[in-house]
Amino acid sequence: MSEEDKKQPSLWQVAQSVGAALFGVQTSKNHERDFTHGKPSQYIILGLIAVVIFIGTIIAVVKFVISLVGVD
Image 1 (tube, rainbow, N blue to C red):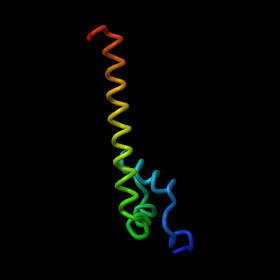
Image 2: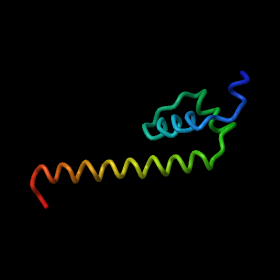
Image 3: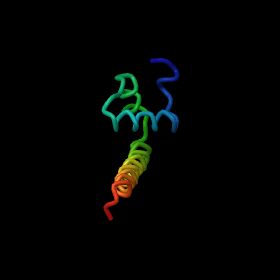
Image 4: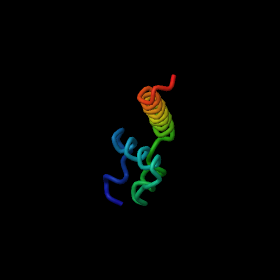
């Protein structure tokens, strides 16, 4: 393992891992890094934030489409 693989993942790397998890794609190298050196709390918090943003986006899109159709 290189020196970079042994250190804790940065916030950006955690965010990328959470995004990859939402889409169901992740490299085995990043997966191993996450489970070996990552703090679960970081992934849980960023995962919850990502889910809230995702649900908010879906609600906003549905409301927009409904307003275009004219249904209230």
